[in-house]
Image (cartoon, rainbow, N blue to C red):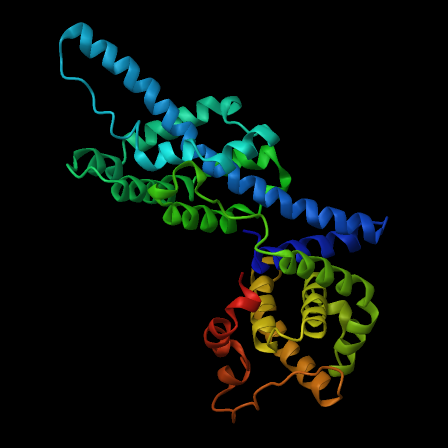
Length: 341
């Protein structure tokens, strides 16, 4: 589940924190990085368990409504949502239950939030359409939860506040983790029953090594990488740069130099996106141009053994400021195994 996008985000955050912290201990910083990534996996399981918690609240409501209907001799309420086939399978999932037992991550302490979320679900058009539909299939049950998650859990300010109170590590994790929860919902197959596999913490040891190697290279070779920056742009005044820009470029250079199988254009695009997210509004375009120049300089001087396309003739000033941006989609697809597992 922990992919390279999330790893890059965490390394940007923790590299910045490392330099702001007076006590710079590399080993402790690396432990903090791996712990921070493990907390993202905790969040993944915690959000899956939210579906189970809502389902249990729905059952309590059904029990009360059923007892009332029996007393009054009225029609019994539908149990369709309370015993949604996908939710039942998730509730019985061995991996999720094992994690909850180990971590003690339960929603009992936030029962009021879960009840409020269930009330929002009951009032939603998606719920109404689902309950009115005569189709009774696993696929429909799974799909309604995919829709409800996107509509009421993925964008939920109350949930964001609750998660922030539970862990400061989750402040920036949820947006990425939501995509993996939705992917997991889509992958569920009734044939697998309780043995349905959830996403593993890491796809393989290679991604975990990617995190360690990139972080260590960034910190241990900081002087060398900053020299490359100044060597490429001799009129560059570091004091006028946002400090985060320097950190992001330092990490990008570390990735270029440390991982021969990741194309330069992919690396540049990843860190341009992070600059737009974490630095100033001008940082994305500036870092795009600077990293392109730095990479070409390193290749020309034999320090970087990679290949870059020859720049196209300048057609307009706007195009000339974006030497690699338009190549992202093609090269990311070609190198999906290397960059986005």
